[in-house]
Image 1: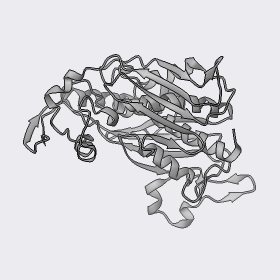
Image 2 (image 1 turned 45 degrees about the vertical axis):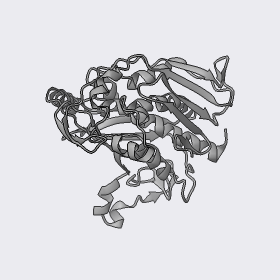
Image 3 (image 1 turned 120 degrees about the vertical axis):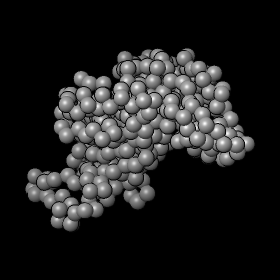
Image 4 (image 1 turned 30 degrees about the vertical axis):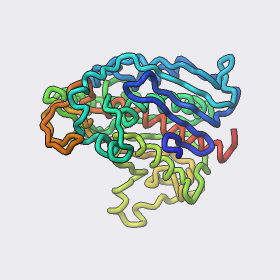
Length: 349
């Protein structure tokens, strides 16, 4: 039914479970004869991998990619490209005691009712572990777009109540929270460490800026650039909202305040965030997504088991006190996959 497939001219299909043998992705529709930078591909995986950041989960996966098809002598063949990432550090026993309990904030209850079966070992397909496959596909899409002059960068502009007021992109790789604000980054890290000590979690907001896009990407009316990006980003499990340009703040403005006037040299502002009528307008594409606090926390919670009995329980295991840090490369990946697909529709391969 396509529930595990995303894209139009470029399609990805992910597979595998959090505690299974491996997870992976099939990428269909890539152009041929493109040389993949395997070192960069592995670097992008390292940005998301469990155990790669001291502020995140203690699960330690190397996330080494294996390319099974679609590559010959280092170049894409134009046929389906298949990547797998083997799970090597799963601890299913952490979930045995709560295998019959519906964890608050997770997909346990809905998956059980929909399918009559659920993989209680870390959530199976509903786990954030699935996003490693997206990052693998997105890393390749980012490489192709970069060759076309398109650059994608995502960063944390808010963790809990701590807000980044600066946009110094050179600062992003200098701190553990990938924030473009040196001062805010220090406070964000302190907050994450504080909630971890309290066995709690915290959410935040991720902003994405895409530069170098041409005018014309997007297929009205249902495959608008912003509509497909919204689909792509909200399909990430922890994302609960998205806005483009001024977003919800536009509702507080008048038309003259919100419109982007033009002169002979181009646009004079960018309240729209680089998209008009679902079509990229050549300006930087800017959007923000809201990320919920990690659902798995070490505090006592109330729920019911599969028989309807009320339970007080604690989730053991290795979990992120803030998923924002590791979700950033996932947001970039889904952005790249969406935009490359639209590029192929507009300009071909």
